[in-house]
Image 1: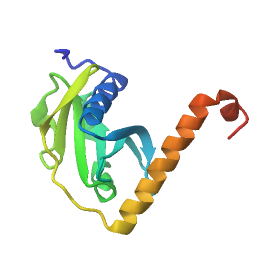
Image 2: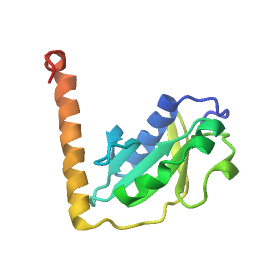
Image 3: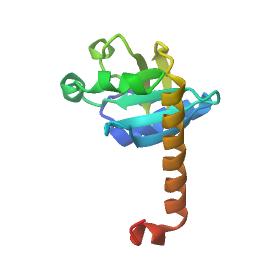
Image 4: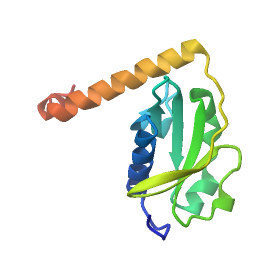
Length: 149
């Protein structure tokens, strides 16, 4: 893993996605929640559990973030992800914690589990599936996106 914490968000995101995929999760980036908030990473596990990750690459961004508690009702596990070398004592203690670089990541503190109501889990899972399918379609047919679909 890289030893400095000057990594940018795409590098940390890549490492987080690799880590989650290796643990049996299917991650999506830039996932929009029903309330309009945007998660850096949302992932669905093999059992249907929903995990969310908020990525922070600077202390200023971490300290200014007041929105992260609003993500908690939309997932069963919530993590902050930071680059290798980031001052971990600055990260709130309640959520889980992932340390990442561009090649991978490690979960250094597990998230508490907060089960979702079945109706909310179903709605989020359907939304996740639609976003994933639409992204796959656009990736395979760039002209579709150019036509405004």
